[in-house]
Length: 337
Image 1 (cartoon, rainbow, N blue to C red):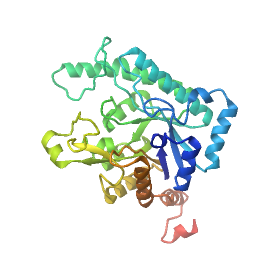
Image 2 (image 1 turned 60 degrees about the vertical axis):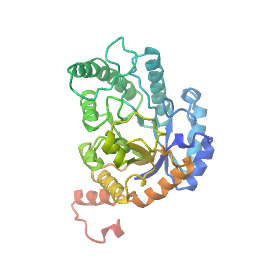
Image 3 (image 1 turned 45 degrees about the horizontal axis):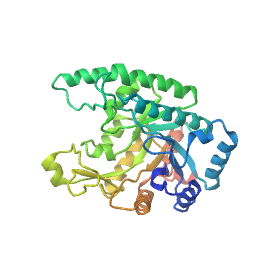
Image 4 (image 1 turned 90 degrees about the vertical axis):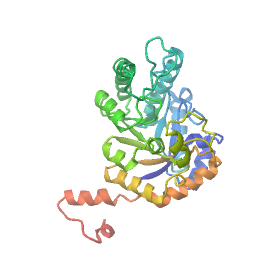
């Protein structure tokens, strides 16, 4: 596994300042926004696409600070019912793919989006219950007429430009928000679709991240390290669906926190260990959205916490390789690998 960071927390820095800072903290990779909600503070596709010298300069900067580009992020809603909004997100996602191709990055991270309830809708309609029956009809129309056709086309475009993984963040408010909906889209579109596994959006839904990781074995393509604190009193009073501002910390049922401030070390040990068990050995990318901490304090606390939790050595995979080669792993083998 590798320790990574999602770049918006450092958008006030230049790219070189951010890389120098992260290198000093022992960070190994950067997930970098190229449009959509994460913004493009450090990566503006139009400035790099079709410009080999600019691409080389960009990649050289990462090599200088011994940090790899883990993924390109472009979270948006290309299924938005307002055509001008959808087109903007669509074009940003396409450009993220094009710049990823030139940078040699194989993973794009984003949202699956959410359509309206009909062709004349003005706003997205996230369906959360089956009755009255109108909701079931909306859901059927969304998936059959909008979600699946769009992502089939976009998956083909991505593959034609060397992208191997589209990692959707399972996020309430969009059609892919849990393992079941992620796997539904993956089954319809193909294995290029996988999960950006962010426990913070699962905790408050009542989803056990360990069980969810097991359900998504083989389909986890990226991971966001972000925590959620459940306010037991507010949640027990008003439930988990909460439309109050994220800044209304005292009254919300739950709030996003830096890793370790919502769930303890044992919980995160189990999450990381289960990721390892199902074969995920990629980047653990810190996403900072803690309203109680400054960006640098939250980030540095998350880095320190995860250094104690992550499994950096690949002994599990190497022992499996030994077994496949016909030799049993014995106590003490790790010292001879």
